[in-house]
Length: 116
DNA sequence: GTGTTGACTATCG
DNA sequence: ACGATAGCCAACA
Image (cartoon, rainbow, N blue to C red; front, side, top):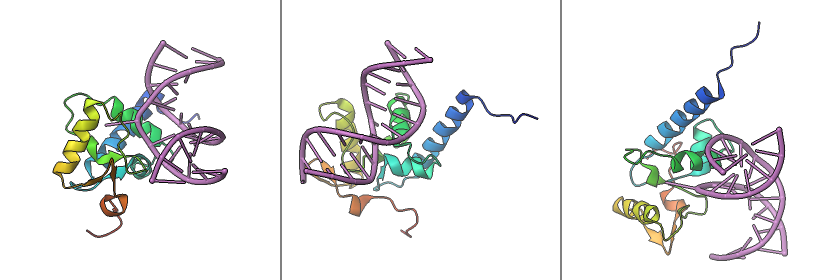
């Protein structure tokens, strides 16, 4: 008999939920890259999907989206955008320090396999 | 259905 | 360290 594949819509909703859950688990004062979030959500090589998901976040979301940055240690937003300043402000309030416009990933990257 | 875009990333010069 | 390039994949026109 034919398998019962879920619709693309349902799968997309599932992926979004997985991405949300991963981001929710990032502790304060730590950051994750898009690729890392995708991998932890079971979506390897879907870094751009994480970006798309965050871009469409509802305005009043409680998700700590500001803890997701790119692999260069920079924020993936135009520096002149309100969102950029919001993200940077929130991170600095969590004691995540910037050097120029970059974060030291070696220091602030969340390593779930390491004991804190 | 096809081509373009983008809150990505690894690699190269 | 930095910009250009190619690969990637879902959303959008």
